[in-house]
Image (tube, rainbow, N blue to C red; front, side, top):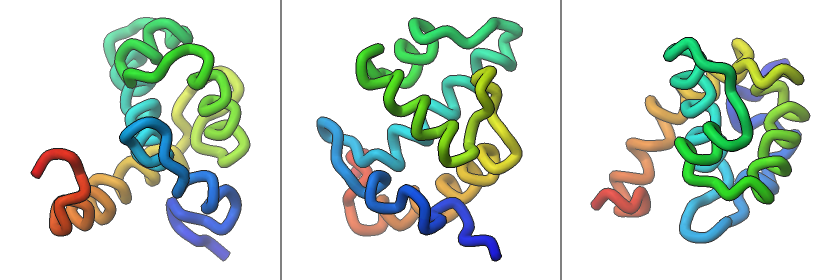
Amino acid sequence: MSHGAFGVFGFTAMLTVVGSRLTFKIYYDILSAIHLIQKAGEHPTLSNIGHRAQVPNNRLEDRLRELTDLGLIDPRMQVTERGFEYCMDYKKEVEPFLRRYGLSGNG
C-alpha cells in the first residue's frame, strides 16, 4: 500500500519547522541539490549539497540520514525513484497549495 510522498513513516518529522522552512521543504531542497550536482557531473558532498540547499553541515547530516531512512536517497547519496516522486509531488501538489495560502515565502 502506497501513501505517496507523505507516507505515514516520518510524517511528524516532515511537519517540523527548521528556521523559516518546514522540513518537507528542506527535504525537497536537498533532493533538488543532489540531482543538480549529479546532473552537472559532480559527486555530491556535504559541502556542495549544503551550499546549494542552504542547509548547514551539522543539520545536513541529520537530514541526509532521514532521507535515507525514508527511501528518498540511497546510501551513496543518489536520489531514488521514490525521491524523484517526492520532488514531483512537491512541485505539483504542495508548492501550489502553499502559494495559494501565502505560505511559500514567495507571496
